Image (cartoon, rainbow, N blue to C red; front, side, top):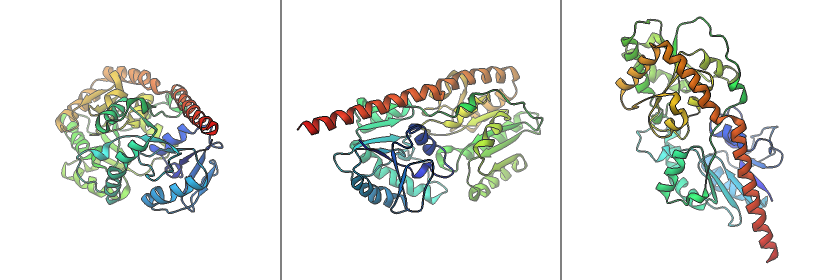
Length: 369
């Protein structure tokens, strides 16, 4: 039996979906075969590099050809979409991280993201119907998949995201520096960053700490100017820092030094930053939307993501109550351990055992005939 996967978003600087794929195949890097485009590579993986670099062409033209000529039995499509012209004998394991692209959100500031949303809207429903197993990262998304696409719930497996074991280690000593609120978000409309900046401005007006800052990580540098203009209009330009790419070696320290972490999203499939913040001992104020209460549990405080006033009030209450912050910090560490990699690995092992058992059973039946 041959299992292959799309490796492309797990090469180079990867997070999110690429990180989830790496966790799914951990310990099986030399067993499973990864496909990537011509010129791409990673020495830690067993790869075949061939085909187009433009992703839709790669996925719909190059991948089916590679799967066919390599006699693949099971294909793992780990990034929401999948090839639509797979050989019938190939079992498709589809990972659907979220359905944000189906939501009626305004266009992104990024043309690339807008094109990607259209592509996913076209491909994902068809891929879901074709899939033999659908993996998703939260029970919220699992229920949405079943209700929206009339998907048989017996095909769905929930395997949550996790983070490295180093996140669950001892605390580092907090440095003496201006207090700051941390937001990890992109420029996509679903990330709701504009309202978060407005809420921070209101929060500063409610408090008496004139040193309080907002640090924003995750927005591509070419979009910084748009948000700086908003901060300028709100009178907080000098108190908002937009960070470029933060390496994994530094991101944990950025969390641990924060006074408060805010997750303002309108929609999420999981919300890894909430997990990272809780594991780091940082109080979390999060949107009450979609799956975030499932991830944050009783450890976080929630707000209406469409209400700047509600967001700012929640931030203010946490920032001005040291006892509450200490309580939230301890609760967050406990909640984060529900997603510890050791627990998630057991679920992944069960998934591969099931897939291999099903495939081997089908192969034995075919040979008997």
